[in-house]
Length: 316
Image 1 (cartoon, rainbow, N blue to C red):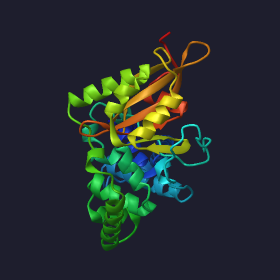
Image 2: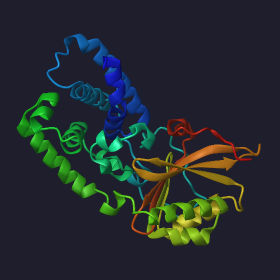
Image 3: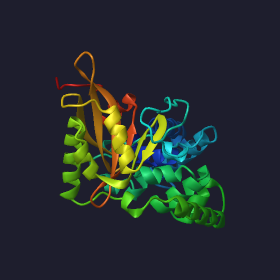
Image 4: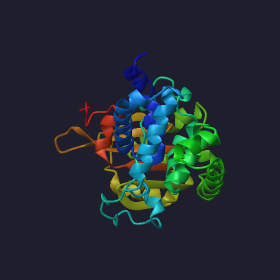
C-alpha cells in the first residue's frame, strides 16, 4: 500500500477526530487537508517509529490545536440563554456565531465501529459538551478516552509530562460530569421502537399532524434551530412553534431520512413558489426510550451536499 492509499484509508476517522476537536464539519475537513499536506512534506523525515495512522493523528491533533488558538468554541442555541415561548418573536439568524455543525455518518465509511472509537463521543450532546473544555483538555480527553492512547504517548504529542496529562484528564472528566448529557441522550432506542418513532415523525411532519406529534415528544422536549438563536423547551412550546411555522396540509414538505452523529436525522425540503422542493434544514433527532426528546434543526442548506443530498428534491 502506498502513502496515498494509506491516507485515503484513514480519512473518515481523521475527519471524525478533527470534528470532535473543532465541532465543525467544514473546519474538520480543512484540518484533514492540512494534515495531509504536512504529512506529504514531512514524509521524508518519518522514520516509521510509529504507524502511519498514529503519525497522522499526531499531525491532525496539532493542526486542530493551532486552529483553536484563533477560534471560539462551537455552540448550540441552548448554550446562549433561556428558551423562548413565542414563535412570532424569533431572533434574526446570528450568522456570526460559531455554531456547532452535524456530522454525516456516511463519512465514516463502511465499518465505522472499527475506526472511530467510542461512538457515543460523536453524539451531538457530547460534542457540544466537549466544546466547553479548553482545547488541550479536549485533546487529552479524546486521545485518552476515545482513541485509548497511553498517557505517555499523549504526553509526547503535547510536549508535556504524563503527570500533566493525567491531571488534565481528571479536570476534563470533572467538567464533563457537570455538563454531561443524560445517558438516554447518548444512545438510540432499539428496533422496532426507533423505526416506529421515525416513521410517525416523518408522516406527521409532512402532513402537519400536531396530534401525532404531541404523542411523539417527551414532556421536556427541546427544539433548536441554529443559526436562529431562539430555542424552545417543553412539549407545549415546541408544538406551538410547529403550529405557527408549518404550513398546513400535505404536499408542502418532504422529509428524507438520513443520519448524523450516530443519530436519526431527516433532511427537510420545503415547496417553493416554483412548486419545487428546496433544501431547508437538517433535523437531528434525539430519541430516548419511547419518545423524541430533542430536535436540532440546522437551518443551513449548504450542509446538504455533505450528506449526499441535492438542493432540489425530485418530488413534484
